[in-house]
Length: 269
Ligand code: C2E
Ligand code: CA
Ligand code: CA
Ligand code: CA
Image (cartoon, rainbow, N blue to C red; front, side, top):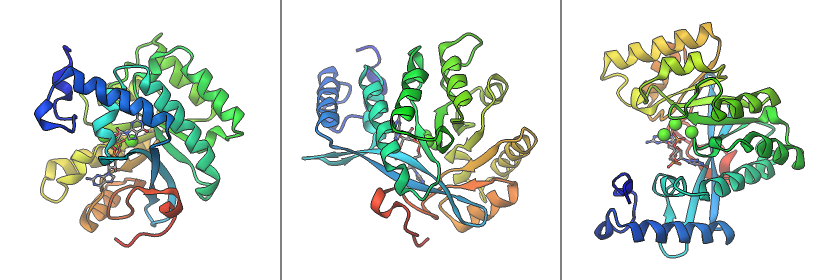
């Protein structure tokens, strides 16, 4: 297909790179996996500056019978090419609603694909699931990336506004990784900014990255919105991010994504 180049690194068979049949094969297997309950959610804790768990992010995992754990970076892009992403998204929301009571009364952030937001009935179906499962919308955070178009009148914008009106909080994921970060802040009243990991990884080595993180935190403080730093792997990064004014922290230093039974347990750094 014309977009197969995008997927060449995502297939698990290196000798079949870019092969359309391979992509369709993964899609079929994923569809079956959804039905056969081979998908799982892992939860990664998000901490406050004083290292209390404030919330969790739900991250989907595919436990394949033959190939073992497959990362979402490998299969989400394939799911996004069909209605599979909608089915997967519905499954994730239902799973989260069922898991909420075992996550210590704390909010859960879920990743929503830009593709899901293109359906006019997305927010309505989302709200129906929350109502059906008796879920408080204020305990749900929806994370979206900067690739979602947010022009006045766009269905994407209307879906986000409808969710937010319910009490669902909306986060910009991977903030700074796209080309229109600041425009994004003007386009919608976000509740949370998640600073992209690429700004965190070079803290200490790169003075400019430190300055950018501080500037993002300054803007966030005056809006005001919460700033989550993701990909925190070292003590030094954590100290710098806290110094810069980040209000929440997520990363392997503080806690890895884990299946529910162990998600709430403290993890050694
Ligand atoms: P993301 O939303 O930016 O999620 C954060 C990713 O960073 C996760 O990768 C997480 O495991 C990883 N991570 C967390 N802390 C650290 C750290 O300290 N260092 C490093 N190197 N990585 C860290 P994961 O779970 O492989 O997910 C990859 C991407 O797949 C996610 O990026 C998100 O875009 C997508 N994804 C995951 N679950 C879902 C889902 O349920 N629905 C949709 N639409 N997309 C999902
Ligand atoms: Ca995310
Ligand atoms: Ca992210
Ligand atoms: Ca990402």
